[in-house]
Length: 277
Ligand code: SAM
Image (cartoon, rainbow, N blue to C red):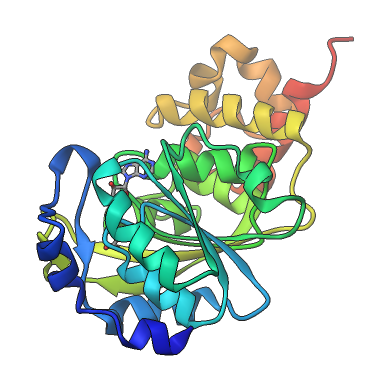
């Protein structure tokens, strides 16, 4: 396998040979430097016994690095133009399986076949957050996630109470996993370079994550609270019961969402989930 990978042409030549140019509508910014994709594969800490699901392989730079670790890789690519190039790679590497379609519509549980699978991806920016929320709160949970985001989104993912970027996303992330920003990637590392800087975040789901109905309640509470983040909770949570609702969770109704920690939001979600007496 590694011999097959070593014999591959540089990614730039593969793109040129297939007449492929990046398309803006698919959020395409490619990593053509194998040193960077190998570093991401190392940070993902995957290896020979692992199954990796990669969203958006594009020309396959990260895919090559993941295959080099000895992992089995399943890619999901929406842009059909990459089919011939990726099929060439899959012919050389039997550990690679290809799926073509929209990752938002794919049933990852079916791809994983009941075994643990890790998600590693240089995500298309336009679908990165909805995909992350699905993986954190949906019916299928990855063993780990190593994901590239624009830096400002990475900040919102790892923010803690008191940080400027603390909000809905940070609360849902903290409730469901351990998250760490593990690598900053400058815009110039991509072809073509995006207008923003990027960062890789590694997330490991907690074994004790809240039950699905509590998570659903948490999403409702955080949506309402951070939807009007400058207001006191008694106002921003008026639709859920206002002051009495906040007091029932043991919180001061005069505080604002940005000062409430995960434990506080979980108590609010518990109250929301509780059947009315
Ligand atoms: N992994 C490649 C790399 O690092 O060079 C490409 C990354 S590029 C930022 C994002 C990739 O995701 C593109 O190949 C794009 O076609 C693909 N993509 C965009 N939207 C998608 C979706 N909804 N489902 C699956 N793939 C998608």
